[in-house]
Amino acid sequence: MEPLNHPPLDSTALPLVESTGNGLTSRQELMALLRKHDMTPTHPRLLIAELLFSKHEHWSAEKLFAKLNQPHHQASMATVYNTLNLLVHKKLLREVIVDPVRVFYDSNLSAHYHLYNVDTGELSDIGFEELVIEQFPSMPKDMVTQSIDIIVRVRPKHKAETIPA
Amino acid sequence: MEPLNHPPLDSTALPLVESTGNGLTSRQELMALLRKHDMTPTHPRLLIAELLFSKHEHWSAEKLFAKLNQPHHQASMATVYNTLNLLVHKKLLREVIVDPVRVFYDSNLSAHYHLYNVDTGELSDIGFEELVIEQFPSMPKDMVTQSIDIIVRVRPKHKAETIPA
DNA sequence: CTCACTGCAAATCCTTTGCAGCTGC
DNA sequence: GCAGCTGCAAAGGATTTGCAGTGAG
Image 1 (cartoon, rainbow over the protein chains, first blue to last red):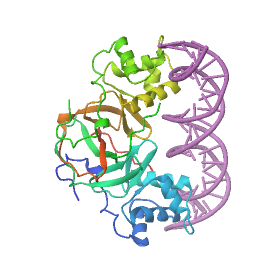
Image 2: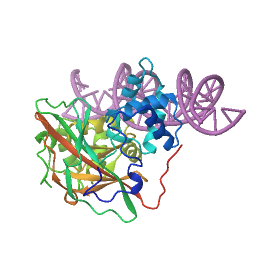
Image 3: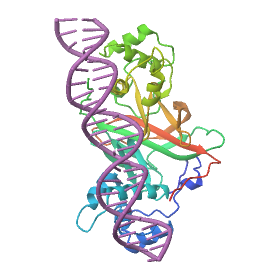
């Protein structure tokens, strides 16, 4: 899925690999993926990559760490963060900033947007076709668009607003 | 400036007051504003409100604190945070989350979007008319849209990408 | 006078870093 | 074997909190 009516994105902002997610990527494929991006395919990294790339899902560092700390799975928090940051820099992973205290990582690199349930902290996708931008502002000269993040914050209709103090 | 082709926003998500910013709001007006929202108009709060509401600008807690700590201006960091959070809850201020480590506060409550310069950390406005959403996804039933945050991340064309490790 | 607000400092939370030991190739 | 990676624990930075003192009405 390529940007259609998007303004031109900086080419380096586009995925450097074919969309990795979705399928159950095999061990071999994961190793190849890491190697291709100059990352030594170590055990912890493979475990992390397996979770991230086997299926499009939104992960937080904490959630990932919790999942890893099951039998046969392990990596330290530091390694989880290191690997996540590395994957983001390598553009194999997208950082979704919805809340200063809740950063999500998304292996879905195709153009899409996000729906954030403020009540539950749940994050879900809005397909690229579901939200159409017709007119886009002209960019300042010498500037390139790196990404367009759209977050639609929703909450349950019934839930009364909590306004403290 | 009212939403035009936006999907209907939850009414409580709309400004409860006439757009306060822009003009140089007087001391009296600021006191009235705070009182109207059940906030005791104390000295520190007035100083903070003065900076926030006299002109549409993007403030971080830190920047605000720095500005306050000049002669005749003072408030502790705790009070700055307390006041900012309070104003956000009262919907007199909008939180703009662009970076987990860089939260901005915006007194411009009218519908608009943001342009974030990744290189300098500078945040600027994209007018509501400059970016037109033509098609909007249908919301899950029982859900109301609280806000639509659009952040266009840009960086200087010339600047080489920094990919560590 | 009273309740709410303030400021300080300590506490939290998430994330990063320093560094010694381990591991992929 | 050696560079690169890991884990631990300590450091860091931003925000929050506890609490005694202060000030608005």
